[in-house]
Image 1 (cartoon, rainbow, N blue to C red):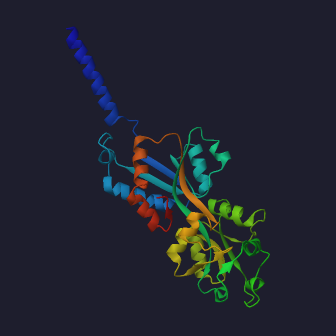
Image 2: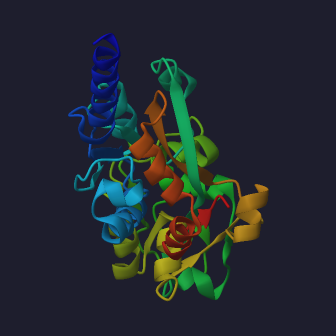
Image 3: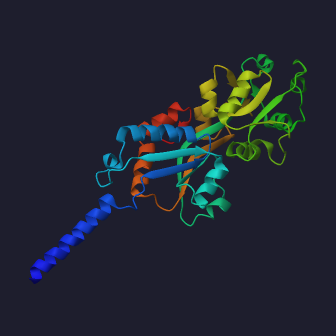
Length: 292
C-alpha cells in the first residue's frame, strides 16, 4: 500500500511538472517591441520571417506549448522605447543612439543587444547645384546651416544662387537628432523653423522632392535612395562602411534594443534568430551594417 502511494505521488509530481512546462498559463506567447523608428522596420521584417517559418511556439522548441507566435513592433522614438520598458508597457525598447547612464540607472537588471551600426549621412538632392562645385562640407558650415545663420545657398558658396536652404531634421526629441546635436551642433540649437520629419523615410522623401533641401538621412535610408540623393563628405570623411566601422566618420550611432532582466526562453529564441545569419541578412538588406 505504501509503495503504491509513493508511485501515485511520483506520478502526480511528474504530471504536474509536465503540465507546467507544456501548458502553463504563464507562458507568454506575445513579445512586444517599442521605440526607434529606424530599427522598427528591421525588427518587424525579422519577426515576420520568424513567424512565417514557425507559426507556433512548439515549432521553435518542442518544450514550448502549441501557441501562436505573436510579435508586435511599434515605433515612437528611442526615448519612448526606453520609457516603455521602464513602465513595463513593452518587453523590449528599441533605441537608435547610446543609452544614457541616467536611463540605465532606472533598470534594476539592464540588458542591451546591439543589432547594427548606422550613420547619419548629411545628404542633398542629386540636383542640388552645390554638387557642381563640391561634395564636401565641414562641421562649422553645418552648424551655421542648421542653426539658421546661413539662410541661403550662396551664403555657403557665392557661386550659388540666392535660394533658401530647406533644413530637414528628425523630430528634436528623437535619437537621431540627439546624435546630430552632440556630434555637430554642440551647444548651438537647430533653428526653430527646420522641418521635423516624423521618420527617416519622411526625411529622405523631403530631400528627394526638394533640390534645395539638406538633412541627415540614416545610412540605411541613404542606401535605399542613393539614386536620388547624395551623401556629402563631412570633415574629410565619407560615410562608407569602412569609415563607419572604424569610427573615422563621426556622425554615427548604434541600433540596439534593451530589456530589464533576463529574457524568457521564448524571447531568447527570437533574439537568437535576430542574430542568426538570416536575421543579420535582413539587417544588411535594410541598408545598415550588421554587428557580425
